[in-house]
Image (tube, rainbow, N blue to C red; front, side, top):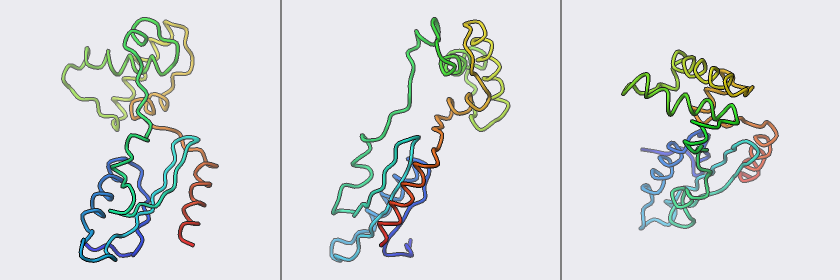
Length: 168
């Protein structure tokens, strides 16, 4: 594999992709050649939070070394989603975690399949109506099951500007 630039900026949107490029750059380091480490410039946003950093393989901590700094996906207690939902997200989790396996058995939910999302949305809407909870929408249903965090334009602009400064 040949990387084209002495600096490798990333434009990645997933943890798995970042881990892969990090491992690739670390594996390309030749201990006999001090010029072999390629700096990795990484930036990302998650809602109002963002980060921009330079990773120098074998010199600074790599991406893998800082995984514990990342946010963990939101999880709701089963007792809350089953017995006392208070949020639209609770109703969606109830449909996803408890009702999907009960109705569909071993069939894995496909979060990219509109039919699966529509089924979850319909079931979550019934649960929300029963508990007088408003706000269950198709897009929220998809966002909850895919763990999508809305992008904030100002956060994206700040991180993009910071990344550009790293090239100066």
